[in-house]
Image (cartoon, rainbow, N blue to C red):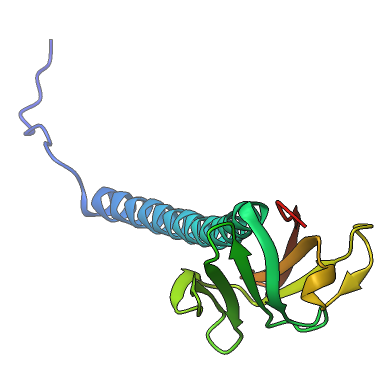
Length: 174
């Protein structure tokens, strides 16, 4: 048997280390790009959910309040996209809703709308409905139901997408 006196090589050559480093850099770069894309998609989805929730909560609040009220004291024209509404409940308290188009906010309160109800609401319009449920009026004595329509924007890479929600609430007593 012949034994070699040459020392056994241990460790890596420079070429092996450079190849491994290049592969690790490519893998790390790919991972960072994928994670950044996933985080961006998650952020857009979270923002969409917040805006939708805000719009739905506003409609729900307004609908529940209107159903408990006995009459409308004043309402904006149905074509006004930054509308206002004042309702009177059974206790005689006036409840006010108003849309601030400049800030894209919905405000509410007793007597005057001063408290923030929702953000990111692009438009909000009200329509007073007569007893037939379809004819509109701004005369408070003829209003039996109130229809509220809200629009909001969702941000997309290709541009904003506008969504619309609407709800009709019949007043408790005519």
